[in-house]
Structures are given as C-alpha cells and as structure tokens.
Length: 472
Image 1: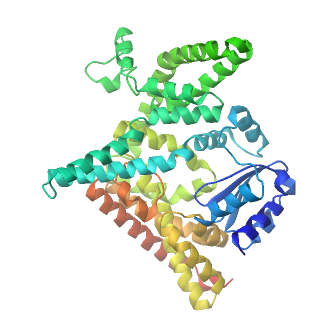
Image 2: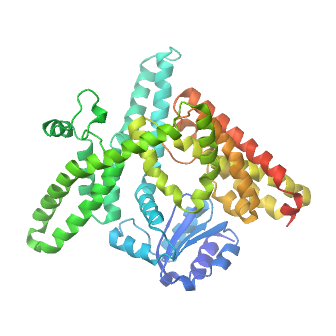
Image 3: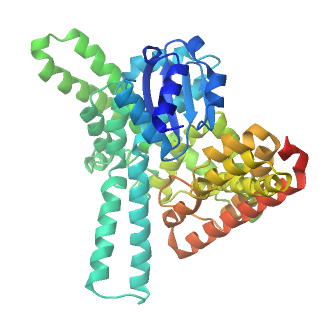
C-alpha cells in the first residue's frame, strides 16, 4: 500500500475529512481530533496495512505509523486530502472544550496533556541545544587536558557553546511564548514574562523588599530564575486570563495601547511578587525530593529507584503520565545543571529492543514470518530511541513481553542511576542520546546501561515467553 493509499484509507476510516477537527504528527504518530468518535472505525484502522497501532482518548486518536512514514502520510492528509492542520494556536478555550470531550479523563492527565502541548514543539530545539552543549563540554575538556590545541578548536568550542546557550540560556522566554500560544494569550507577552524571570533587576527588587539572601543567593525568596519553568507557565496562564478580560472591555480604538500595557503591568506584578516566590518554593521542594530519591548518596536507594523508574516508564507512557515529567526535567536542568532522570527513563525503550530480539529468534524458529517482518522493520527505530513501532507492533499486543521488557529495562535504569549519569537535555533515547550525556564517563556509562537493558530485556523475555506464545 502506497503512502497516498494509506492516507486515503485512514481518512475514510476516521469518518471522512469533515469529521476531523485537526491533524498533526509527532515523531511516530498521526494525531487527529474528531468531531464524532462514533464514526471512527478504530478496529479497522488497527488492521490497516502500514498501521502499527492506535491509541484513543475520547475523540482524540494517535495512529502509530513509525518514523519517516508518519510525516509523509500526514502531509498527504493535510495538503492533498484537506484535513485541517493543527497550527498550535487553538487557545485555552479550544483546549478546554477538547478536554471536556474526553471520557474518563482525570484532571491530572488533562494537566499533563497541556504540558505536552507546550513543550513538544520545542523538543527539536532542546535536543539540538543539548547536543551543542554536550560537544562543547567534551571539546572543552579535551582542550584542558591538552589532547587538542589551537585556535581552530577554541573557536569551534565557542561556537558550539554559543549555539547551545542561545536556546537553553533563554529557555524561560521560549517557554513563555509557547505557553501563551497554548493558553490563547499574545505570544510576545508570554515571552516578556519569561524574560522577567531571568532579568537582572529581579535581584535589586528582591533586595529592596528584604527577600534576598546575600550569603546563599539561591535560597532567596525572590531571585533571578526563581520558580523557573513552572512559574513561567503559571504566570502566562494568569496573563491570558487578564488579557482576555481587559480586551473584552476596552474599546477597539484603544485596544492596541491599553490592553498590552495594562495586561503586562498587572500580570507582571502578580508574577514577580506572588508566582515566582510560590513556584520557587515548589521547585525547590521538588529538587529536594529528587535529591533524596534520585540523587541519594546511598547506592542501594539509587539502584532500587533506578530499577523501578525504568521498569515503570513505558506503562506511564501508555497512561499519558509521562508528560508530567517534562517540568521535572526542566527544573533539574535549571537548578542542577543537568537531567539525571532522563538517562534512567531512556532505558525503557532499550528493554523493548532486547525483548523484541528474543521474540524474533523464537519467531524464526517457529516460522512466524509476519512477526519477523514487523520486528525487522521496527528494530532500527528501537535502537535509535523510537519505541512505538516495537511497543504497539510487538510487545504490547502480545502482553507478557511488554512486562518482561520493562523488567529488563529496570536493570539498565539501576546502572544508570547508580553511576549518576547526567544529561545536558532530553529528547529521543536509545543510541542517539549518547552525545546528550555529560562528559566521556557519562556517555560511556549511558551506553553500558543501554547494553544492560538490551541484555536484560532479552534474557527475561527468553525465560518467561514460550515458543507457543510467539506461534500464536
């Protein structure tokens, strides 16, 4: 089936283009929102050649097509078949209506979905910036150790550092802009709030209010960066409410002057004196808890927490709870200079790879050519950190391998946590994430963790999965 044929089939089974509210894609999935879920033939979509799986939440459908293919099919759906494109500027009201339309959807999952909408479009920049910083740090170490020298390498290190800091150094501003797009506020206003959070004048204001700790600045009630990403998101939400209410009441002739000035003045004051200190308290508490659980000095605690986190990560993905981890990544990056949680959770996909290899060998032995074909097509993506094809095409439909893969991943997570691997950013896992790790030792230990997870997933699956399971 060609990509065009696949796109036409999917649109027909979704109830036609008139039943689709918006369509977009991520790395492996075509994401659509439908008006009437009753018109969607979900079971037939799952059976369609080229579809690896379907995840449904109310009227929202995620059709797993795999890397590469998903963009081509999505482009055909939008450009040739007329599906409305999700531009990302639906606003808070549209998002609210979408949330209401979901069935059995908890407020926690709603919040996590909202967080995902804010951060997912920024992931490519996060990955790129993390890679630049990683290579910059590695090159800087090589220069310091005398392994390389000369103006060329110094210039290269400066350029890499500049490229990395151009995004991560102003992460709060980019987050404010994106949050404003999601909440329906003016994007530039959101960027201003993000800029306020890292502005130097915050320190002077804090000193005048008696909120600054001269001895330990990071423990100040109010200081530059206090509240971090959590505070910016909440501040922009407040901004969106203020802006919308003012705009409703201001005459059109004065809107261009009065609405921006008043909205930013009011939300800025609330943000500086209420939201930043409160969000700072929350983020400081979060880091303290993480330090006990994740960065414990006790190696036994690190091993146990690493095992459990890696083993349970993919079930969290299926439940949509993984979106809630993004603010934790951001807080760690801001306050700790790196992300220790991401390398551990990245082992979840590696466990799936090991399990899939075990199943492939069994499928080859019992003559299940269809299973062999699925795994052969999905394994390269799995090694590169894209786990959906293996999850929805192999381990999850079979049931038990999904569990054995998680157990195998736990061993890799335990090793990564034990050796305290830190990452410069977060993004796709697998082998492509190696340059994201901090320092040569971090890269090596992350790779060792992946190998342990591969082997763990393979061994545990071989022990608990029988040939008859694969044959059926």
